[in-house]
Length: 470
Picture 1 (cartoon, one colour):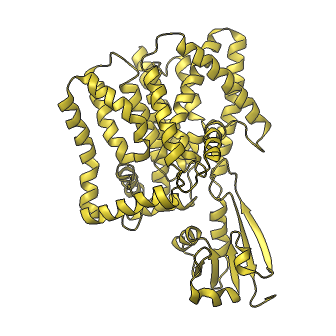
Picture 2: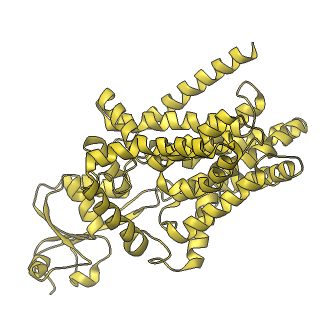
Protein backbone atom coordinates (compact mmCIF):
# COMPACT_ATOMS: atom_id res chain seq x y z
CA UNK A 1 0.00 0.00 0.00
CA UNK A 2 2.83 2.39 0.92
CA UNK A 3 4.69 1.63 -2.32
CA UNK A 4 1.52 2.24 -4.33
CA UNK A 5 1.03 5.63 -2.65
CA UNK A 6 4.65 6.52 -3.33
CA UNK A 7 4.35 5.62 -7.02
CA UNK A 8 1.17 7.66 -7.33
CA UNK A 9 2.78 10.62 -5.59
CA UNK A 10 5.81 10.41 -7.89
CA UNK A 11 3.62 10.30 -11.01
CA UNK A 12 1.71 13.36 -9.82
CA UNK A 13 5.00 15.14 -9.10
CA UNK A 14 6.30 14.26 -12.59
CA UNK A 15 3.16 15.68 -14.20
CA UNK A 16 3.36 18.88 -12.13
CA UNK A 17 7.06 19.37 -12.91
CA UNK A 18 6.55 19.02 -16.66
CA UNK A 19 3.32 21.05 -16.79
CA UNK A 20 4.70 23.93 -14.71
CA UNK A 21 7.87 24.22 -16.77
CA UNK A 22 5.89 24.07 -20.01
CA UNK A 23 3.68 26.90 -18.72
CA UNK A 24 6.77 29.02 -18.08
CA UNK A 25 8.53 28.14 -21.34
CA UNK A 26 10.73 30.77 -22.95
CA UNK A 27 9.88 31.90 -26.47
CA UNK A 28 12.83 34.21 -26.91
CA UNK A 29 16.63 33.95 -26.67
CA UNK A 30 17.61 35.23 -23.22
CA UNK A 31 21.36 35.82 -23.65
CA UNK A 32 24.41 34.80 -25.75
CA UNK A 33 24.90 31.47 -23.97
CA UNK A 34 21.24 30.56 -24.50
CA UNK A 35 21.65 31.54 -28.15
CA UNK A 36 24.48 29.06 -28.65
CA UNK A 37 22.43 26.23 -27.12
CA UNK A 38 19.38 27.18 -29.20
CA UNK A 39 21.51 27.13 -32.36
CA UNK A 40 22.91 23.78 -31.24
CA UNK A 41 19.38 22.38 -30.93
CA UNK A 42 18.84 23.27 -34.58
CA UNK A 43 22.29 22.41 -35.93
CA UNK A 44 24.79 20.94 -33.48
CA UNK A 45 28.21 22.15 -34.63
CA UNK A 46 31.13 22.48 -32.24
CA UNK A 47 33.27 24.31 -34.81
CA UNK A 48 30.62 27.03 -35.13
CA UNK A 49 30.31 27.11 -31.32
CA UNK A 50 26.76 25.74 -31.48
CA UNK A 51 27.23 25.31 -28.55
CA UNK A 52 30.76 26.17 -27.44
CA UNK A 53 33.26 23.56 -26.23
CA UNK A 54 32.96 21.22 -24.31
CA UNK A 55 29.84 20.73 -26.41
CA UNK A 56 27.56 19.32 -23.66
CA UNK A 57 26.77 16.30 -25.88
CA UNK A 58 24.49 14.40 -23.48
CA UNK A 59 22.35 17.45 -22.74
CA UNK A 60 22.23 18.50 -26.39
CA UNK A 61 21.38 14.96 -27.47
CA UNK A 62 18.33 14.92 -25.20
CA UNK A 63 17.28 18.42 -26.32
CA UNK A 64 17.67 17.53 -30.00
CA UNK A 65 15.54 14.41 -29.48
CA UNK A 66 12.68 16.43 -27.97
CA UNK A 67 13.13 19.13 -30.62
CA UNK A 68 12.70 16.46 -33.30
CA UNK A 69 9.63 15.01 -31.56
CA UNK A 70 7.88 18.32 -30.81
CA UNK A 71 9.18 20.47 -33.67
CA UNK A 72 10.04 23.27 -31.22
CA UNK A 73 13.28 23.82 -29.34
CA UNK A 74 11.42 26.08 -26.88
CA UNK A 75 9.17 23.18 -25.87
CA UNK A 76 12.15 20.81 -25.92
CA UNK A 77 14.15 22.88 -23.43
CA UNK A 78 11.07 23.18 -21.17
CA UNK A 79 10.50 19.42 -21.28
CA UNK A 80 14.13 18.75 -20.39
CA UNK A 81 13.79 21.32 -17.59
CA UNK A 82 10.65 19.62 -16.25
CA UNK A 83 12.28 16.19 -16.33
CA UNK A 84 15.43 17.59 -14.71
CA UNK A 85 13.31 19.19 -11.97
CA UNK A 86 11.69 15.82 -11.30
CA UNK A 87 15.10 14.13 -11.35
CA UNK A 88 16.68 16.54 -8.88
CA UNK A 89 13.70 16.23 -6.50
CA UNK A 90 13.81 12.42 -6.57
CA UNK A 91 17.58 12.59 -6.04
CA UNK A 92 16.96 14.84 -3.03
CA UNK A 93 14.45 12.33 -1.63
CA UNK A 94 17.12 9.64 -1.96
CA UNK A 95 19.83 11.92 -0.57
CA UNK A 96 17.72 12.81 2.49
CA UNK A 97 16.36 9.27 2.90
CA UNK A 98 12.69 10.21 2.84
CA UNK A 99 9.69 9.56 0.60
CA UNK A 100 7.14 11.74 -1.16
CA UNK A 101 4.22 9.98 0.54
CA UNK A 102 5.32 11.44 3.90
CA UNK A 103 4.95 15.08 5.05
CA UNK A 104 8.74 15.35 5.30
CA UNK A 105 9.06 14.34 1.66
CA UNK A 106 6.44 16.86 0.56
CA UNK A 107 8.38 19.60 2.38
CA UNK A 108 11.59 18.59 0.60
CA UNK A 109 9.85 18.49 -2.79
CA UNK A 110 8.37 21.96 -2.19
CA UNK A 111 11.77 23.43 -1.30
CA UNK A 112 13.21 22.16 -4.58
CA UNK A 113 10.16 22.75 -6.78
CA UNK A 114 9.75 26.43 -5.87
CA UNK A 115 13.44 27.26 -5.68
CA UNK A 116 14.00 30.36 -7.86
CA UNK A 117 17.31 29.30 -9.39
CA UNK A 118 16.21 25.73 -10.11
CA UNK A 119 12.98 26.94 -11.74
CA UNK A 120 14.68 29.67 -13.77
CA UNK A 121 17.43 27.34 -14.99
CA UNK A 122 14.81 24.69 -15.73
CA UNK A 123 13.45 26.97 -18.44
CA UNK A 124 16.68 28.62 -19.57
CA UNK A 125 18.30 27.13 -22.67
CA UNK A 126 21.21 25.73 -20.66
CA UNK A 127 22.38 22.40 -19.15
CA UNK A 128 22.89 23.56 -15.55
CA UNK A 129 19.79 22.01 -13.99
CA UNK A 130 20.30 18.66 -15.70
CA UNK A 131 23.89 18.72 -14.49
CA UNK A 132 22.74 19.52 -10.96
CA UNK A 133 20.28 16.61 -11.04
CA UNK A 134 22.94 14.14 -12.22
CA UNK A 135 25.39 15.41 -9.59
CA UNK A 136 22.89 15.03 -6.74
CA UNK A 137 22.05 11.50 -7.88
CA UNK A 138 25.78 10.70 -7.77
CA UNK A 139 25.98 11.91 -4.17
CA UNK A 140 22.76 10.13 -3.19
CA UNK A 141 23.83 6.78 -4.65
CA UNK A 142 27.38 6.77 -3.31
CA UNK A 143 28.48 8.81 -0.32
CA UNK A 144 25.15 9.24 1.51
CA UNK A 145 25.11 5.60 2.54
CA UNK A 146 28.22 3.98 3.97
CA UNK A 147 26.63 0.59 3.28
CA UNK A 148 25.34 1.29 -0.23
CA UNK A 149 25.04 -1.85 -2.37
CA UNK A 150 27.71 -2.27 -5.03
CA UNK A 151 25.13 -1.75 -7.77
CA UNK A 152 24.47 1.77 -6.43
CA UNK A 153 28.19 2.50 -6.35
CA UNK A 154 28.63 1.40 -9.95
CA UNK A 155 25.58 3.47 -10.93
CA UNK A 156 27.17 6.51 -9.28
CA UNK A 157 30.43 5.91 -11.16
CA UNK A 158 28.52 5.57 -14.43
CA UNK A 159 26.66 8.84 -13.77
CA UNK A 160 29.97 10.60 -13.08
CA UNK A 161 31.04 9.84 -16.64
CA UNK A 162 27.66 11.03 -17.90
CA UNK A 163 28.01 14.23 -15.85
CA UNK A 164 31.11 15.14 -17.85
CA UNK A 165 28.93 15.08 -20.97
CA UNK A 166 26.18 17.14 -19.37
CA UNK A 167 28.05 19.85 -17.43
CA UNK A 168 31.81 19.35 -17.37
CA UNK A 169 32.43 22.24 -14.96
CA UNK A 170 30.50 20.38 -12.22
CA UNK A 171 33.00 17.51 -12.30
CA UNK A 172 35.30 18.95 -9.55
CA UNK A 173 32.36 18.53 -7.14
CA UNK A 174 32.15 14.82 -7.99
CA UNK A 175 35.87 13.95 -8.03
CA UNK A 176 36.30 13.14 -4.32
CA UNK A 177 33.07 11.09 -4.17
CA UNK A 178 34.25 9.26 -7.30
CA UNK A 179 37.62 8.33 -5.81
CA UNK A 180 36.07 7.16 -2.55
CA UNK A 181 33.38 5.20 -4.38
CA UNK A 182 35.93 3.39 -6.55
CA UNK A 183 37.79 2.39 -3.38
CA UNK A 184 34.58 1.18 -1.71
CA UNK A 185 33.61 -1.08 -4.60
CA UNK A 186 36.82 -3.13 -4.14
CA UNK A 187 36.49 -3.73 -7.86
CA UNK A 188 38.84 -1.10 -9.25
CA UNK A 189 39.12 -2.62 -12.72
CA UNK A 190 35.34 -2.89 -13.09
CA UNK A 191 34.90 0.63 -11.72
CA UNK A 192 37.27 2.15 -14.27
CA UNK A 193 35.65 0.09 -17.04
CA UNK A 194 32.23 1.49 -16.09
CA UNK A 195 33.64 5.03 -16.01
CA UNK A 196 35.34 4.65 -19.40
CA UNK A 197 32.16 3.18 -20.90
CA UNK A 198 30.01 6.07 -19.66
CA UNK A 199 32.43 8.63 -21.13
CA UNK A 200 32.75 6.71 -24.40
CA UNK A 201 28.97 6.74 -24.86
CA UNK A 202 29.04 10.48 -25.54
CA UNK A 203 32.68 11.15 -26.47
CA UNK A 204 32.87 8.76 -29.43
CA UNK A 205 29.75 10.16 -31.17
CA UNK A 206 31.10 13.68 -30.60
CA UNK A 207 34.45 12.74 -32.18
CA UNK A 208 32.68 11.14 -35.15
CA UNK A 209 30.42 14.17 -35.60
CA UNK A 210 33.10 16.84 -35.15
CA UNK A 211 36.27 15.09 -36.28
CA UNK A 212 39.29 14.50 -34.06
CA UNK A 213 41.40 17.35 -35.42
CA UNK A 214 38.51 19.82 -35.31
CA UNK A 215 37.68 18.74 -31.76
CA UNK A 216 41.26 19.38 -30.64
CA UNK A 217 41.25 22.83 -32.27
CA UNK A 218 37.94 23.76 -30.60
CA UNK A 219 39.07 22.37 -27.24
CA UNK A 220 42.37 24.24 -27.33
CA UNK A 221 40.84 27.56 -28.43
CA UNK A 222 37.94 27.51 -25.98
CA UNK A 223 39.93 26.16 -23.01
CA UNK A 224 42.71 28.73 -23.32
CA UNK A 225 40.16 31.45 -24.04
CA UNK A 226 38.08 30.53 -21.01
CA UNK A 227 40.95 30.54 -18.54
CA UNK A 228 43.02 33.41 -19.95
CA UNK A 229 40.79 35.80 -21.92
CA UNK A 230 37.00 35.84 -21.67
CA UNK A 231 35.93 33.21 -19.13
CA UNK A 232 35.61 35.47 -16.10
CA UNK A 233 38.26 33.50 -14.20
CA UNK A 234 40.75 34.80 -11.65
CA UNK A 235 43.11 35.59 -14.55
CA UNK A 236 40.82 38.15 -16.21
CA UNK A 237 38.66 39.20 -13.24
CA UNK A 238 41.36 39.12 -10.54
CA UNK A 239 39.60 41.02 -7.72
CA UNK A 240 39.22 38.19 -5.21
CA UNK A 241 36.98 40.23 -2.90
CA UNK A 242 34.43 40.87 -5.63
CA UNK A 243 34.55 37.18 -6.48
CA UNK A 244 33.88 36.18 -2.86
CA UNK A 245 30.98 38.62 -2.63
CA UNK A 246 29.59 37.29 -5.91
CA UNK A 247 29.61 33.71 -4.58
CA UNK A 248 27.77 34.75 -1.41
CA UNK A 249 25.26 36.80 -3.41
CA UNK A 250 24.83 33.97 -5.89
CA UNK A 251 23.86 31.54 -3.14
CA UNK A 252 21.76 33.83 -0.93
CA UNK A 253 20.00 36.11 -3.41
CA UNK A 254 19.99 34.31 -6.76
CA UNK A 255 20.08 30.76 -5.44
CA UNK A 256 17.70 30.89 -2.48
CA UNK A 257 15.66 34.01 -3.28
CA UNK A 258 17.00 35.84 -0.23
CA UNK A 259 17.63 39.51 0.43
CA UNK A 260 20.21 41.67 -1.33
CA UNK A 261 20.46 45.30 -2.28
CA UNK A 262 17.19 46.79 -3.60
CA UNK A 263 15.15 43.60 -3.18
CA UNK A 264 11.66 43.48 -1.68
CA UNK A 265 10.65 42.97 1.94
CA UNK A 266 9.51 39.40 1.32
CA UNK A 267 13.12 38.43 0.56
CA UNK A 268 14.10 39.55 4.08
CA UNK A 269 11.55 37.09 5.46
CA UNK A 270 12.94 34.37 3.19
CA UNK A 271 16.50 35.10 4.34
CA UNK A 272 15.54 34.96 8.02
CA UNK A 273 13.59 31.78 7.37
CA UNK A 274 16.55 30.10 5.71
CA UNK A 275 18.90 31.18 8.50
CA UNK A 276 16.54 29.63 11.03
CA UNK A 277 15.95 26.43 9.08
CA UNK A 278 19.55 25.90 7.97
CA UNK A 279 20.94 26.65 11.43
CA UNK A 280 18.56 24.18 13.01
CA UNK A 281 19.18 21.71 10.20
CA UNK A 282 22.96 21.87 10.65
CA UNK A 283 22.57 21.27 14.39
CA UNK A 284 20.27 18.33 13.64
CA UNK A 285 22.64 16.77 11.08
CA UNK A 286 25.84 17.23 13.08
CA UNK A 287 24.08 15.97 16.20
CA UNK A 288 23.56 12.50 14.77
CA UNK A 289 25.46 9.99 12.69
CA UNK A 290 25.04 11.08 9.09
CA UNK A 291 26.68 9.02 6.36
CA UNK A 292 28.81 10.99 3.96
CA UNK A 293 28.50 14.31 5.78
CA UNK A 294 32.26 14.99 5.98
CA UNK A 295 32.79 13.93 2.36
CA UNK A 296 29.97 16.24 1.26
CA UNK A 297 31.49 19.17 3.16
CA UNK A 298 34.91 18.58 1.57
CA UNK A 299 33.37 18.18 -1.91
CA UNK A 300 31.45 21.44 -1.45
CA UNK A 301 34.66 23.17 -0.36
CA UNK A 302 36.52 21.89 -3.42
CA UNK A 303 33.76 23.13 -5.71
CA UNK A 304 33.65 26.56 -4.06
CA UNK A 305 37.42 26.89 -4.52
CA UNK A 306 37.06 25.82 -8.16
CA UNK A 307 34.38 28.36 -9.08
CA UNK A 308 35.99 31.10 -7.00
CA UNK A 309 39.13 30.80 -9.11
CA UNK A 310 38.12 29.39 -12.46
CA UNK A 311 34.47 30.21 -13.21
CA UNK A 312 32.68 33.42 -14.16
CA UNK A 313 31.05 33.89 -10.76
CA UNK A 314 31.03 37.71 -10.92
CA UNK A 315 28.68 37.86 -13.90
CA UNK A 316 26.95 34.46 -13.93
CA UNK A 317 25.45 33.28 -10.66
CA UNK A 318 24.26 30.01 -12.22
CA UNK A 319 27.67 28.51 -11.35
CA UNK A 320 26.40 28.33 -7.76
CA UNK A 321 23.59 25.92 -8.69
CA UNK A 322 25.34 22.74 -7.39
CA UNK A 323 25.52 24.35 -3.94
CA UNK A 324 21.77 25.00 -3.76
CA UNK A 325 20.61 21.37 -3.22
CA UNK A 326 23.00 21.06 -0.26
CA UNK A 327 21.64 24.29 1.24
CA UNK A 328 18.07 23.09 0.67
CA UNK A 329 18.86 19.75 2.33
CA UNK A 330 20.10 21.64 5.41
CA UNK A 331 16.96 23.80 5.41
CA UNK A 332 14.83 20.68 5.05
CA UNK A 333 16.43 19.16 8.15
CA UNK A 334 15.56 22.28 10.13
CA UNK A 335 12.06 22.30 8.69
CA UNK A 336 11.46 18.70 9.75
CA UNK A 337 12.58 19.50 13.29
CA UNK A 338 10.28 22.53 13.45
CA UNK A 339 7.32 20.56 12.08
CA UNK A 340 7.83 17.96 14.78
CA UNK A 341 8.02 20.59 17.53
CA UNK A 342 4.32 21.44 17.44
CA UNK A 343 1.76 23.71 15.84
CA UNK A 344 3.91 26.86 16.13
CA UNK A 345 6.75 25.16 14.28
CA UNK A 346 4.41 23.96 11.53
CA UNK A 347 2.98 27.47 11.21
CA UNK A 348 6.47 28.98 10.86
CA UNK A 349 7.39 26.46 8.15
CA UNK A 350 4.10 27.05 6.32
CA UNK A 351 4.50 30.85 6.31
CA UNK A 352 8.08 30.52 5.12
CA UNK A 353 7.02 28.21 2.29
CA UNK A 354 4.28 30.65 1.28
CA UNK A 355 6.69 33.56 0.85
CA UNK A 356 9.33 31.33 -0.72
CA UNK A 357 6.85 29.83 -3.17
CA UNK A 358 5.45 33.21 -4.20
CA UNK A 359 8.98 34.47 -4.90
CA UNK A 360 9.85 31.42 -6.99
CA UNK A 361 6.67 31.65 -9.07
CA UNK A 362 6.99 35.41 -9.63
CA UNK A 363 10.59 35.12 -10.80
CA UNK A 364 9.69 32.24 -13.12
CA UNK A 365 6.85 34.30 -14.60
CA UNK A 366 9.10 37.35 -14.97
CA UNK A 367 11.52 35.22 -16.97
CA UNK A 368 8.79 34.58 -19.57
CA UNK A 369 9.02 38.26 -20.59
CA UNK A 370 11.98 39.15 -22.85
CA UNK A 371 15.32 40.16 -21.37
CA UNK A 372 16.82 43.56 -22.15
CA UNK A 373 18.84 42.27 -25.12
CA UNK A 374 15.77 40.49 -26.51
CA UNK A 375 13.83 43.76 -26.19
CA UNK A 376 16.62 45.57 -28.06
CA UNK A 377 16.38 42.98 -30.84
CA UNK A 378 12.63 43.52 -31.13
CA UNK A 379 13.14 47.29 -31.13
CA UNK A 380 15.67 47.08 -33.98
CA UNK A 381 13.46 44.66 -35.90
CA UNK A 382 10.68 47.25 -35.94
CA UNK A 383 12.99 49.69 -37.73
CA UNK A 384 13.09 48.83 -41.43
CA UNK A 385 16.08 51.07 -42.19
CA UNK A 386 19.60 49.71 -42.53
CA UNK A 387 21.61 50.12 -39.35
CA UNK A 388 25.15 51.03 -38.54
CA UNK A 389 25.35 49.39 -35.14
CA UNK A 390 28.12 50.13 -32.67
CA UNK A 391 28.38 47.72 -29.75
CA UNK A 392 30.49 44.97 -28.21
CA UNK A 393 31.43 41.95 -30.27
CA UNK A 394 29.21 39.70 -28.14
CA UNK A 395 26.12 41.89 -28.53
CA UNK A 396 26.81 42.19 -32.26
CA UNK A 397 27.00 38.38 -32.48
CA UNK A 398 23.68 38.06 -30.66
CA UNK A 399 21.96 40.60 -32.92
CA UNK A 400 23.34 39.14 -36.15
CA UNK A 401 22.35 35.62 -35.10
CA UNK A 402 18.87 36.94 -34.27
CA UNK A 403 18.41 38.23 -37.83
CA UNK A 404 19.24 41.91 -37.39
CA UNK A 405 20.76 43.32 -40.58
CA UNK A 406 23.20 46.20 -40.80
CA UNK A 407 26.83 47.22 -40.63
CA UNK A 408 28.18 46.05 -37.29
CA UNK A 409 31.12 47.80 -35.67
CA UNK A 410 32.87 46.29 -32.65
CA UNK A 411 33.27 49.25 -30.29
CA UNK A 412 36.20 47.58 -28.57
CA UNK A 413 38.10 46.80 -31.81
CA UNK A 414 37.28 49.46 -34.42
CA UNK A 415 39.04 48.83 -37.73
CA UNK A 416 40.58 51.75 -39.67
CA UNK A 417 38.16 51.38 -42.58
CA UNK A 418 35.17 51.58 -40.20
CA UNK A 419 35.83 55.13 -38.93
CA UNK A 420 33.65 56.66 -41.65
CA UNK A 421 30.69 54.54 -40.54
CA UNK A 422 30.69 56.37 -37.19
CA UNK A 423 30.07 59.73 -38.91
CA UNK A 424 26.66 58.86 -40.36
CA UNK A 425 23.39 57.65 -38.87
CA UNK A 426 24.40 55.39 -36.03
CA UNK A 427 22.77 53.18 -33.40
CA UNK A 428 24.95 52.65 -30.34
CA UNK A 429 24.10 49.79 -27.99
CA UNK A 430 25.86 50.07 -24.66
CA UNK A 431 28.07 52.72 -23.11
CA UNK A 432 30.51 53.84 -25.80
CA UNK A 433 30.01 57.63 -25.81
CA UNK A 434 33.77 58.22 -25.85
CA UNK A 435 33.98 56.45 -29.19
CA UNK A 436 31.26 58.52 -30.87
CA UNK A 437 31.90 61.86 -29.16
CA UNK A 438 28.84 63.75 -30.41
CA UNK A 439 25.39 64.64 -29.18
CA UNK A 440 22.73 61.91 -29.55
CA UNK A 441 19.30 62.44 -31.04
CA UNK A 442 17.54 59.89 -28.89
CA UNK A 443 18.34 57.50 -26.03
CA UNK A 444 16.24 54.83 -24.38
CA UNK A 445 17.05 52.00 -21.99
CA UNK A 446 15.81 48.44 -21.84
CA UNK A 447 15.71 46.53 -18.56
CA UNK A 448 14.90 43.23 -16.93
CA UNK A 449 15.11 41.94 -13.35
CA UNK A 450 18.80 41.12 -12.67
CA UNK A 451 17.71 38.39 -10.23
CA UNK A 452 16.07 36.60 -13.15
CA UNK A 453 19.11 36.93 -15.42
CA UNK A 454 22.27 38.71 -14.34
CA UNK A 455 23.56 39.19 -17.90
CA UNK A 456 22.95 42.64 -19.45
CA UNK A 457 20.12 43.60 -17.09
CA UNK A 458 20.19 47.17 -18.47
CA UNK A 459 21.07 48.10 -22.05
CA UNK A 460 20.90 51.68 -23.40
CA UNK A 461 20.24 52.26 -27.11
CA UNK A 462 21.47 55.64 -28.36
CA UNK A 463 20.76 56.94 -31.85
CA UNK A 464 22.83 59.56 -33.68
CA UNK A 465 22.10 61.54 -36.83
CA UNK A 466 24.66 62.12 -39.56
CA UNK A 467 27.56 64.52 -38.91
CA UNK A 468 25.95 66.52 -36.13
CA UNK A 469 27.90 68.35 -33.44
CA UNK A 470 31.23 67.08 -34.64
